[in-house]
Image (tube, rainbow, N blue to C red):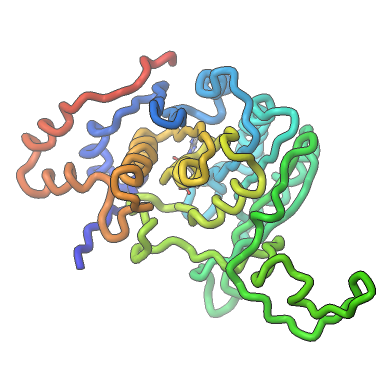
Length: 334
Ligand SMILES: C[S@@+](CC[C@H](N)C(=O)[O-])C[C@H]1O[C@@H](n2cnc3c(N)ncnc32)[C@H](O)[C@@H]1O
């Protein structure tokens, strides 16, 4: 089996520099999808002007944000500074949501540092015009920890709303079979067993998600080079529950483009951005790859296979030849 992964692209400077010429977007630019109306911007979520430019006056029904968490795999900055930064993009999100909308935010809690930033974020959110709806925990199969502590396998997801947004409970069944038997209850004068009363053979998703496989390199949806990819299944669950077909979904931290791909598969429109041109390019390529092959990612390969193989094979001459392909992007406003 071929095994041609990319390392983390944010920290592998040589490979970053080699691949950047192949990226369609530079800072301030937007890629427009002519087929289904998605947009990808190489923009800064903390800049209200840049977000306004990306949104182009449209209001979204659903925002799913997965920012850097200020711990472990991410850059760390002083907590107050991180919280100011978060408040900034949450306020901008609020302006771009319709009056009935949902906001989901993935965040972490550093068990070695006062569980920051999760509690600070929750308290900060009380100042903003959102109502709390749920605090979801997704279980990761692999965790981090030592023999001296419980292994950390939890991933936190906060769910807020504005107004009275859609919540499609029918979309919300897991693929875990119901096993509870003998739970009898009278319905319309008749004694019924638990399974008879159910709309589904499977259990409904609650606020603890244990049925979602964390992405790893053997999975088709794997996008190597990315270091924080969310499984399609959890994003799809959010999209199906909290938006309507053709609805507009936004994600300010695209990375591997999971939200965009999930929106495409579920017939929603997605407006997304990443500050890093490499992750913008990966987002666009993942969508294109899906449209041309039906595949969700690259499993053991990667999104720059042509270019990176060229690099290894014959040096910069080949690289420049491929880099000369036309790029489709709007001119930068910033
Ligand atoms: C945790 S990852 C998102 C993972 C994503 N949900 C997925 O499934 O692939 C965070 C991303 O935010 C991007 N990012 C960091 N700061 C940003 C900013 N100010 N504006 C936009 N994107 C930013 C990083 O480049 C990174 O790709």
